[in-house]
Length: 354
Ligand SMILES: Cc1cc2nc3c(=O)[nH]c(=O)nc-3n(C[C@H](O)[C@H](O)[C@H](O)COP(=O)(O)O)c2cc1C
Image (tube, rainbow, N blue to C red):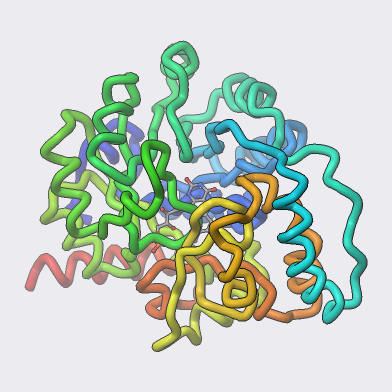
């Protein structure tokens, strides 16, 4: 591939293509290893993983590839446990539970995994790349990772966030445009004010910082990659495109919904988790919309919708699932991850030759 950048040289990878971390079971060791073995950079989305499970996933991935891969965590943010808001949300969620024949569960024992232990697990494992979203990793931890030879990547959705991450000392920045599928990484100001499309965001961040910038959001094929190179990106991070790969652990109904999403709208919603995230519009989102502004905080809402999402996944009821998808998700293809990487490289080269 004719696109060699600081991302490829620093990590010793063949192509500047990062398979996005996708927490919640999508980024199986098989997917991550297949991407890395094919010359890209696979990423384990570990935000929701218990430390022991994370250690297991890292070990399994290391058994399947000797190439670099990334582990991604959520930087914890303060949150309130507001019983009134929880009751109001549950009253609406009970409608879904009735249809799925499940009872309202007991309150979750904890709403988030212990970040300190997750972080120690990553540090000890000595992975090639650590990436994070939802906030800023403290300078001490950034340095600890770098001392272990780990490349540190932060996620920004605005120029101010990118500047702050660069000042913290991260090695690279993912510029996440508002087209992106899944949760918004916004950590300064409101998610609404940080809705900047990839085409607008990437060149502004490239001009604002002196470290490599990785474009993310709405990139599905070689055309998108070539466009990002023109904007000054050092590589791309693609989520929706890898979600439909054979090795992805996404629910079959989710994969089908993406591949068949031609003309279907996406919505940025807090309905599933309490944090703004983009997914295909469905009944769940529409039914929760009237109380969107007073839903419990992330990750409290996430804890209370877990039973519904799990039951819906088992029953193949995509109207109750979080169908995370970027705005270009209808370009998704069903194929093995290695085949997708080969296809992307061919498409990119053809595009640049033209
Ligand atoms: C199902 C799904 C889960 C995601 N989970 C994470 C995550 O755990 N950590 C993260 O940094 N980004 C996560 N993202 C966002 C991606 O890193 C990336 O910004 C996004 O997928 C890019 O948009 P695209 O889907 O149009 O390629 C997720 C995206 C999707 C679609």
